[in-house]
Image (cartoon, rainbow, N blue to C red; front, side):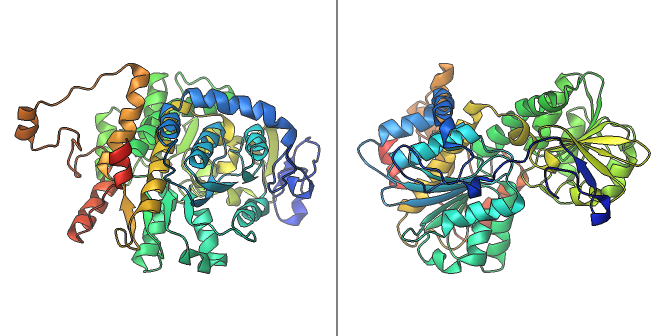
Length: 494
């Protein structure tokens, strides 16, 4: 369905009213930066100065990436790397891209979400010489076109992939499988993309090593938990002006994202219900003071529905039909499959755009639900996320790229690997100075007693920093005799 204009019901889809003026697609514009380079496609190159200020602000809250730049001024661990990326294009991603460039890499980038791109930041990157293909409000066709423009370019062959959701990896497998002959590895940061990689590995179709950043401690416990704990409230408040006190909310999924959302809403005085399929996560929810329910038991009474599962069809048309008037529906998972939005595009329903990324879907009897970002990721589509916590994830991504790119032949097979715990600990240590935090050091006697190296790692691989998927993967890897090693560059230089 078109994001603008009113579509007649007789065409077989819901009607959509919006007063926005039609605009020229960036694909139809010829733009160049101040140096005459036009190898990009963005909304408006004239916004570059504004975007540059946004990036400079983000740099102040991303100390680890800035430290990587400083410590790698002499040696370029990514010299010769050609990284093709598909992530959210925000000021924080720009700091990561410019860090990768400082480490010696060439980058081409597309957006993993049609609503999360900060247009001014994309302009600043294009002005800085990066090949960026993204703008806020892309159509589905635009989305795949941008990815193709990143990959399919004469005289440039990627040798590393940085993905968020698996769409870029999927596109290369589908359209340009021969490219994998020169690709050294894939770094993936979302639960959706990691799930796709494990499927490829199980089917024997994974052609290159892949690093699972999503299940690293520094991603799960910081980006997924703390980031969502803060950004869920921001996204809901900006889009709906809702008051949380006394509201009844159901959160679908009690993984790290769900835990963060529930904690924030509970602190604001909301009555929070949780749905879960996993008895361990379900018991955690109960012990944290939340009522565990099935969705259909509370769907008629709740004021807000939030999905955080990474699954598909968590909220279906039957649930949507039974919701109360003005119920807010949104998704905090990466993929847009959790809410069955397609089922709402029928002739009897009317869609009314009331704000950017806010739609009222109206039933014939006048009942309406408030759908945010058309079921896509709420926080990055409708608001912003804390820069500091993204610094942790971005640093982990950078080190994963360094590790895979520099690993000697044979270290990694065509399989999915987790980051070494030593790398997680190193990323965390780079962020401690921000808090003027001082680590306690083990004495020789203490280290011997615990059987540890004084410099770490400090926890065994089975230590429960994160949910059971990581533990399961480590167990399987141990049984197969696969022990992930850390590239000596990190030990020698950091």
